[in-house]
Image (cartoon, rainbow over all chains, first blue to last red):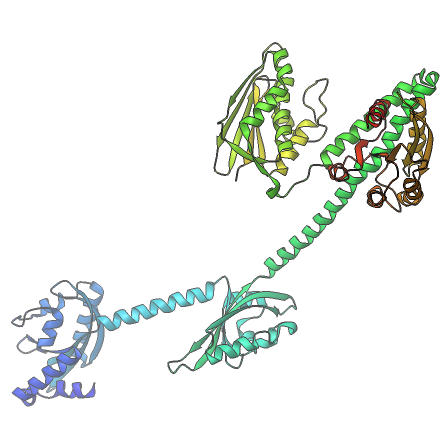
Length: 503
Length: 133
């Protein structure tokens, strides 16, 4: 700048030869710097070629004061430039300012304007200056500022812990999140050897990876590592480490990204424990099922046989109030055991055991097995099932499910109204939906919704309501990966929607 | 209806044995019984009988769940015997586990799987089957 200052401050007579002007213009062109001069005595302004080019005005353009200031339409910058100029004239202060500027062709630019007052006999006669287009530089700086802001924001608000670690393992910079889960302050962490916070068992687990990274064999690695927080808690982290190299490709420092997976870890362990508990409970249930299936049955079987023998051999022993009651009790016991057996034998099979079954065929089969009841009750049964709809099930389960809903629909009909039962199948995204609609008694769902599919729950007074049907049916549906929904209105009817998997 | 000479009951449950014997007697099915309380005892005693052909039981009623040697283990040994005279074998068990019912079908020797309790009607059917053999 010194040379420019010297040129600008040299009296015009000395610079105003052809050679000098040529030289100056050449310099101005190559560095996009123009010059200007304001002669306060004549109130004229002179702009160099480059200055005119920055203003985007033709070379024959004659600038005036008003015109010159009009290139700064924004109040703020116009004030900066006029104040600086005024101070230069009044107080002999040179200036160097950056301004937002709009060219004659309406392009927004950033310019740098430098002014030097020229004094003669204590009076300011001229202000000379240079004019530089710094748009590109300003934009670049703005970009850098923005990027730095972005990086800063990411750094500080990252949900993961982040650290810059020196090649000596000392922490150079840490973000809030890392401080948070290691429970140290930033001051405590800086310059601390990160190895000291590593769980003793996990020290050096990434030593080889680091060597590979320094050698350039890899540019980053990921590893699960445990750290010890200030309060002594183990913090499990998923660590991703990369290396930063300078322009000579020499390693400068490591950048580590640490995701705290302790909670995930805990949850995983909880699930494992839970699975273990469930497995052992399941095993106990299976054992229980076996006990029911065999041991209980053999005792009730023996009781039945003994009672039969008594009846045959000592008929007089049965002729009292007690015997029929004992007989009933034994029969009830046997029946309960039979029911329990039926339930315990429902296994959730692996879905691979399921086969594709034609829904219409199976529904027709259920209808034909209830034919007698249907004729007796004058029931109308409509099947609206496409003949090639297939569902995934075990044959026995599908039989039992369809038959159960159909017999229920007939059993719980309204007195004096012929049952009207409709089967309608539709394909949805993941399921075949089968609606079974009846005009029967309906179920008070407000009262019974939660126990609808419960064991030994009955909702109507009916001679053979055992409270077993819906329970078993629901279990069958669960076992084949389906689901069931119900809509019902008392004295209007019920719609059961069954969802079967089909692929 | 021909009476059966000898029935062999292999079961560890004394109440079942008592009741079964009585039912068989009362329904005039059979008067003579051989009783074994587990599979091991049964196979040891039955092997020479089957091989010699003397006193071979007409019917064997075999329980599954027994101590020492269960019904299946008994069957695995029993099929190795080359019998001098044929017999009819029924599994009589309180297990209604489908796995057991299926498994019984694997043995050609097993005529049928009877689920306990034993009833007179079932006995009559059994007798008819034995006669028609």
